[in-house]
Image (cartoon, rainbow, N blue to C red):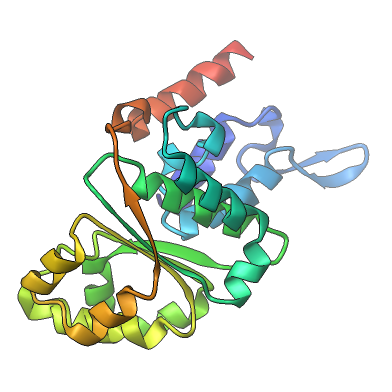
Length: 235
């Protein structure tokens, strides 16, 4: 989402239309921040971290009751101990079929990191974006982040796997990382992921996501925007 689109989105929810998308108002008390300014700051951090808009209002309370209790237990430990986890550079490997909540839990963790009082920076990207950064000589930008999620890390072409593995391994001792994908260790090996990468991956905390897909419970970006507009009109 561009900054202009972000401003439009926040302004659509603004209770004080006099700010006219300037995010401040002028009244008898002088110049003051508009009521939507905190939300703008909050959501801009989400937007800069590549969190899709449909996840901005999503919380762990929205997860279906039958979601894996052990995964939720570990997620809650992370949420309640973010400073320790970031300091100790904890790393996770999420594996399982599509639609079981890997990306959802990853994004909840990322939001918790961004919402903490410590000013941490986080980012979610997929393996193809990592390769693009590498080939454009931009991989050093990853140094700026404390918490990195790499989604679909196991869907690369064979010609790029070694480059990807080298980049990720160079950050494994420096960052908290979540690697999320569908393939098992054996399938990764068969796909051509090198042993040095797989050896490091086995040291990650591994969560196997099982059960039924709950992807349908998530609203699309369009549905999210429409719902926001409806709520605004009803207020």
